[in-house]
Length: 284
Image 1 (tube, rainbow, N blue to C red):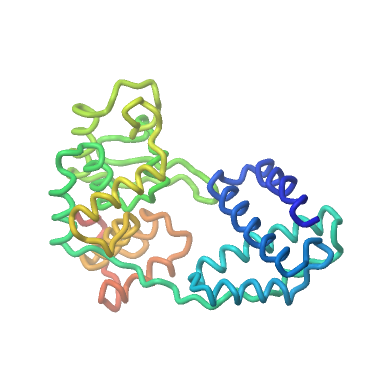
Image 2 (image 1 turned 90 degrees about the horizontal axis):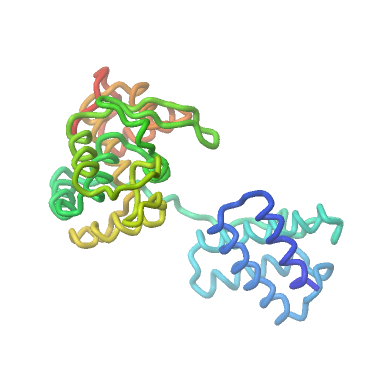
């Protein structure tokens, strides 16, 4: 039966070192699909066709799931049936040609000077959070890069971001404002810990991405800016530097963009037609 294949599929994801959050999401999404198939009297994998999967997609949309959520659920189904073909439970993948719902990419947002100064005021008494906010605003680091930042890689004027996934190692300039915020956290709030990581929890363990995200987003809400998220701090860094005339190649390298065109795509958001030639980052 379709349901009986799920445990082996989940184990295959674990063997491939997929993230725990991905595995949890795939399991939930597939259990929901199996329930739909059984209600349609299609409990066996051999009885599942493209039409049923399309009907499931359309039912989710009719139930007001967002196109993005439906697309994620389809990815889980497609990956599951690909696994089933590889394991020779079926000869062809019925989900392969099922189209994803059309989604409108969300336009990136950035904070105004007044807004990110208000956020600074809100986090001022929480030295760890203040350091993270300042670090992203002044360097444009990704959340995962903040979480994986090590004490040994923070210098007086630059930070080394170690290579990870498909990202090569890079050096990011560290200005005075960010350095002061980091030092303030180290000297006055960071717990004593043997952890090599810069940001740690109260019990000295490395700070997880989800904790960084939820904390920053909570402070953003507290600052009465509910339309923003932590990701918008990185966008703010890029936009403000483009507005200040920073060289596009330099900014692309610092931001860790693989393609220069990715950095160029922010020009319209910044309200300018072409980047400048300034060879030093702007201090926000």
